[in-house]
Image 1 (spheres, rainbow, N blue to C red):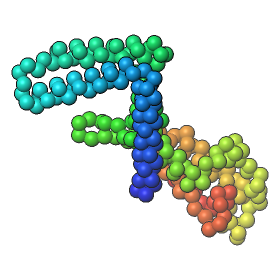
Image 2 (spheres, helix red, strand yellow):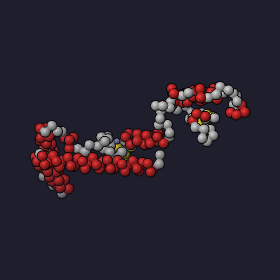
Image 3 (cartoon, helix red, strand yellow):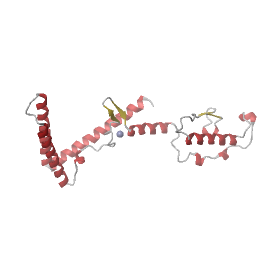
Image 4 (cartoon, rainbow, N blue to C red):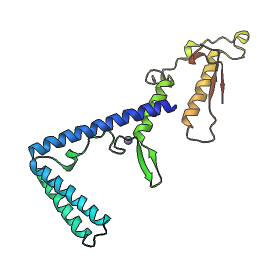
Length: 210
Ligand SMILES: [Zn+2]
């Protein structure tokens, strides 16, 4: 997977995250207009937090963490009660991210030292690889729709350089492919390598190595 694809996806993530946050800000502004009490409470919460931070930075001994926490909790409860009166919740003010796990960043904190890719981004990368591999049409092209009758029953050593018919050959290949899929999680299973002349497509693979 090239960095170009990942960078392009991350740009899309950045845009959708920004859009969710702008939408949330707009919604909040509308709510403030409609319910001015909410604005007052948020301002009180902000002021309390700023004052507390200043006190801590200045090593102010009057700083009382317990008192601060109680005041914040009281204001938050008041805010929730007001929202409830309007059939809203605290989540109504938060950005509506497409992925609530990574908040549309594509990554989640693994520990203090790093982060790991979120499944939503991983899935997008898999989807792109899948489509690029020309195997995206699995609903029509799969083992159950495989038609061995397209292959001849006649052995032609001169033409195919093998002493079995093309049909027998393709059925052997099909069985090996099925075994590969069924034992995919078994680490002792060998990989498959399909080869054939250019332009023959998947129906006419000459050889299968495994
Ligand atoms: Zn995610």
